[in-house]
Length: 138
Image (cartoon, rainbow, N blue to C red; front, side, top):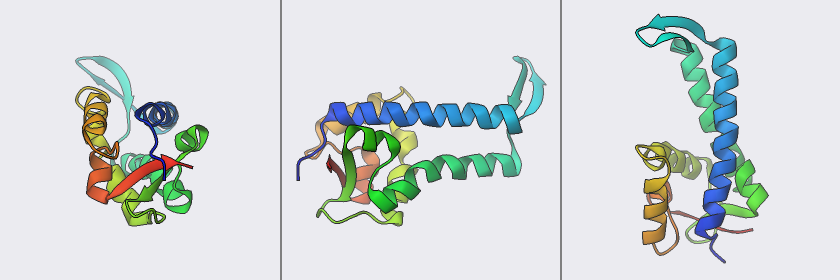
C-alpha cells in the first residue's frame, strides 16, 4: 500500500468542498426562507429542511466511501480510504471519519487538517485517527 500524499488529499478535499458548497448554496436558495435581521435580508433553512441538508451533505461522503472507498474528489485524484489493515472501510468507518470533519474545517479552514496530517505517520486527519483509517493510492 502506498499512502496518498498530503497534496493529493488536499486537492481531493478542495474538489469535494467545491461540490459541497455548491450543493449547500443551491439547496438553501431553493428551500430556504427569507429572514431579515440586523445583517439584512438573507435565506436560511431550519427544522426538517436543515436536517435533510445535513443528511445530504454527510451522505455525499459516507455512501460512496462505504461502497468504493472514494468520494468524487478522491476518485479524480486516484486515492481511496481503507482501514489501517488495508481492508475496505465500512459505513460506520466512513461515518465516524466524517463526524470529525468540523475539526478539520474550522476554525481556520483546513489549517488544522494540514497540521495534523503532516504530524502523523500515515498522513491521517482527526477523523482517520478515530476511525482507524488511512488514505492510499488506488
